[in-house]
Image (cartoon, rainbow, N blue to C red; front, side, top):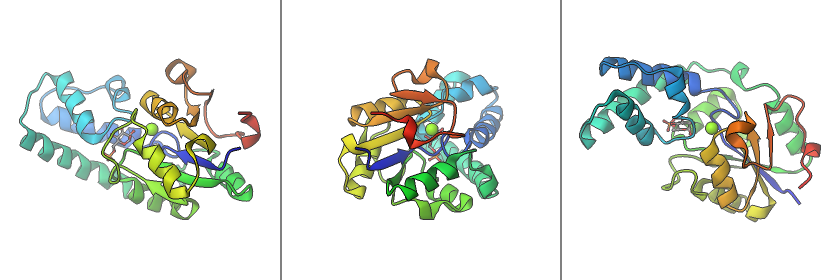
Length: 213
Ligand code: G6P
Ligand code: MG
């Protein structure tokens, strides 16, 4: 029996990767090196500070902790300028129909995101009211593939992990769901998300009837 669906945010509900990319690229350029779209793939599902470490490794730059915190903050200020301009038009296709299906069936909805900007994004998208629980980067101390973010969601909803389905676009997120003893639907390519129970390209035409676990 499925009682709850837990959604990752970036790459599942909305495509924020393009804004992260612009903000990280501009930081890399300021530091004197380039940062490509391919490099940006490596940051999906990864926390802000780990993203910065990966970026600095690409540029071959070593910095002290204080400078790193300042740079992460600078990147975030730039990123927030983009997300504050987001509108409900940017909700990925099919997501709202699927949320409405879940509401009709009495299935609970939670967010399980690494982002510290999750509430800002949900508010911009006018989706906040759909969520029965929100767990984001401000509530957890262990990054995916640790299952903490999803287990906290299940706990807040009062359901057991085995009754939850996680929707994820990042490999570390799929692993986090499995580590938490939850079912997982991968959103994206089977090459990357092969460990999920099923993988679909997106929510258009997707329905709970497709899940037979
Ligand atoms: C998500 C994104 C990552 C991002 C992380 C932290 O997991 O996929 O690319 O680095 O959230 O986001 P934040 O908004 O806190 O910088
Ligand atoms: Mg994601």
